[in-house]
Length: 130
Image (cartoon, rainbow, N blue to C red; front, side):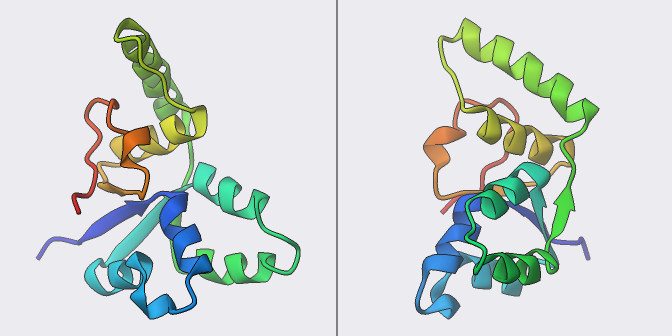
């Protein structure tokens, strides 16, 4: 049987953090459905950067349960190519979202996000359908 893997955008983690009833979150459902969950090191930056000192321990515990993938040279070169393609189409994407997307592509992972509109123009990105 194939290993079921999924990459998460920061929106999925932040939604879990904000929910009062955490059992009703997409993240909890993903932990039940997937063998392994991943985030980009860029996503790690986003959640830690936005955390208050009181919330850092929460994120440290949460991120221990998720595999963090580095934004590496292969991803950087792919990101540069995608920027060129998007410019040709007169489209743009915020760099953190681009870096998260190419990390998913490089590792052949489906990405789940609450902000699909940020990612729809990225070629070869597999977005989790609702």
